[in-house]
Length: 254
Ligand SMILES: C[S@@+](CC[C@H](N)C(=O)[O-])C[C@H]1O[C@@H](n2cnc3c(N)ncnc32)[C@H](O)[C@@H]1O
Image 1 (cartoon, rainbow, N blue to C red):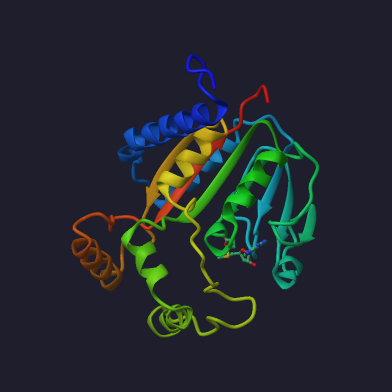
Image 2 (cartoon, rainbow, N blue to C red):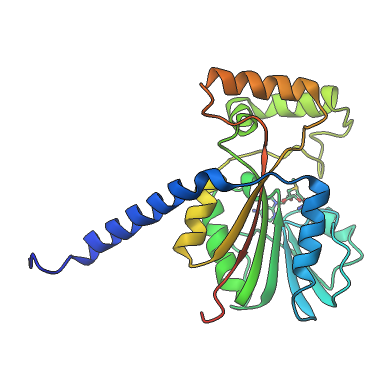
């Protein structure tokens, strides 16, 4: 083997190391957003795109949350046929699994994926498919709970039946755990974290913005549980947020 030229394996290892180092350097930067500020930001970003904007709502559930003035077409995909049947706003409804669904490359200008990836074993595989389906310059909008937050840790460390009990008896959702109603089983693949998402974007040459949000800001019991967990972790698990918003753009020249 030549000593003057680095092998492709060594080059790949070095590139991965460089990407990890860049992720570490930028890790502290994710700013906090409120849910209102997030919706306003998303609306404003989507309205900069030339219409008609082809949007895939991946794991769409029962509601499209954004009011847009730009013309758009909305494709909804979900495992849950009942949720899709309840939607009257979709131009195309697809019952399917994000891990096996098939769309032509570059089919969408925007993929919107909210609170789905944490429920998928094989989340990285789904993200790779999103990359194929997005047009050059396309926008990926992801909302996920952060597996590396105190909340994410508590969710991962407790059994699913405990999540159902909390939804039913603490949060008061009577139908929790019945067919078509949350909570849904969680997997929290490694990519469902700040570091995982930054690394995914870097690896795919995407420009990205990442924000932290907290869905339990008004709930003292949840704040106490997250704070205590964070203290017990020596501060390693942050408690002030549980969710992440990623807005990423693919390269225009791909
Ligand atoms: C927590 S709900 C979120 C729904 C909606 N995006 C929202 O923000 O309200 C998760 C949704 O993802 C869907 N889902 C979970 N795994 C999926 C998969 N592998 N493929 C497609 N949809 C999936 C579920 O059926 C459910 O509708």
